[in-house]
Length: 299
Image (cartoon, rainbow, N blue to C red):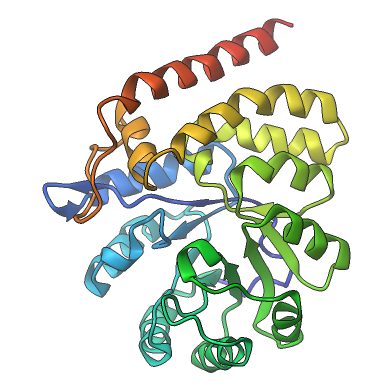
């Protein structure tokens, strides 16, 4: 697999859930999901992020899942989430995964520690020594407990490995898009339409697990300048996306996928399944998306 260029992360990259069954990773379901999203027009998959319960998976489980998905000759490109507190541990994990030649790694700052910007720069430079694959910065203060400044991101963008950032703050996303020093990938699902209307290249939206082809179509309409059509298509998806983050991620997504018969509704403890009350609300939101699709087709 050739190394992507700095603009190699355009389109919608799905931060895929890790299907579980009986306490184990459900490899058959993972393969089926990967095929489903490939056929829906998704550009690539991000495995083992927070949506994929990556911190709860052992390295052999990750390797089994990678090999299961990559065994498809038409498999989508894969990005691996590589987060952790200890820089040396993250670098060691990346060295083990590097033989699978991923499209890149999605790497947040060390969480919980709240290092300084200098400490963040040191962390990423050490990671860059561990691989020649592209590294996507992941700026998510809510989970990491520390925010990267634009200056820090742009300092890293000057190095060969770093060409993109998954940014979850809509105003920072707009700033990064305007400055153009590195590709800003939308990490806030509700900001996805504005991002693509403003010329954004790519996104990593967890909500695209459901009706992925609609998210791809919203992106295409926005890119082609059909703003009103894109807004009309995105509106019911916006309501669904809000519900998918109304309880700890990825429990609502897994519940919705289970309702569609795609996976079992199972998470790894201490993550708990979505509440019973959320099911009917998800069903109504999904029905609204389907209803709007029918109206748009007949319009």
